[in-house]
Length: 213
Image (cartoon, rainbow, N blue to C red; front, side, top):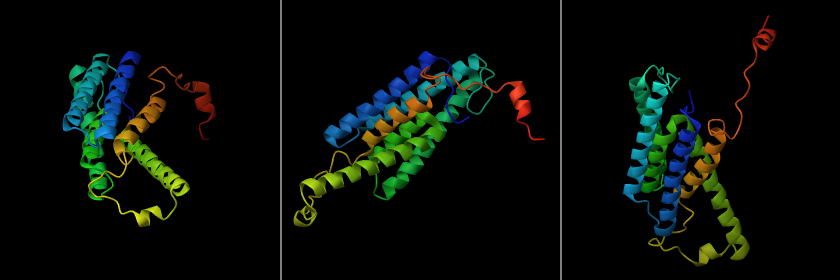
């Protein structure tokens, strides 16, 4: 199962709300200070692990399907929630560490995205990676176009950048991670959040009619 099942609609809203609060706080602090504090990344990681442990345990208590294991009891559900979080953390860390090694992301971005990955699991970590990178490229293009329109193409030649001065508050993944999470997760989880009705299952007659002969 790709998306994390939720034990109830209020839990789904609490899950998304706390995640977006932490991501937004990281973006705000990074925007003001050009730094994501370690305590914030580790707190986000700890909350992600906690929420997924509770989520898995509640699903196990309800004997509902979980991410990988069967939801037979609380212990199995809790183990499934832990596996889900660790898989998301690992994938998020590996991909953003590659960006860090290539000079396209900072160390704070690596820790933040790994922590967010522990919330959303590996499947949606990939979606958030794609979405945040798309937004980063879009912001870069907007900056280039705005600079050409207001300052002319020769400004970069006339003025050498100061290596000790941050180039832009928008050259950080924290903002795009928060935006991508708010937009994409609200859309992907619209059914458990109660924002949309689940797709109707095909009836037995429809299934038989569409079977190949």
